Length: 142
View 1 (tube, one colour):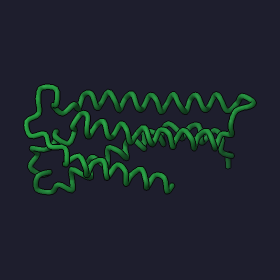
View 2: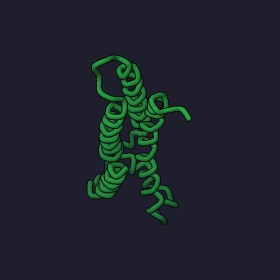
View 3: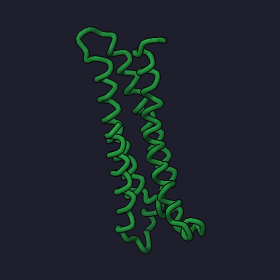
């Protein structure tokens, strides 16, 4: 649980420092890549799914690590990967420039920050969604 707070604070630092990169006149290769970001998010979701499906089948074999340890390790590794994907969205694809000319975000810039932190929470939710069936299958039924 505490690691999630650290990941969230790291995502906040990643977003807050994105304003330090000054791109006044982006070239043709530096436009906001929302489509590329969408494909990256889809790929991240597939990695999460496949990772937990692999854990679900590997736990049944003898000589493998315990289910709790495997799930926890995968969640931690995928959370770090989510930070990397978030950083690519912010620094690589410059998604923050996508909303630079929206009047509401110019008036209240905190809303734009909340939107992008919500994007990181979406990546974490993808991890939790992929982990849930595996966690449920190994927890005792009440």
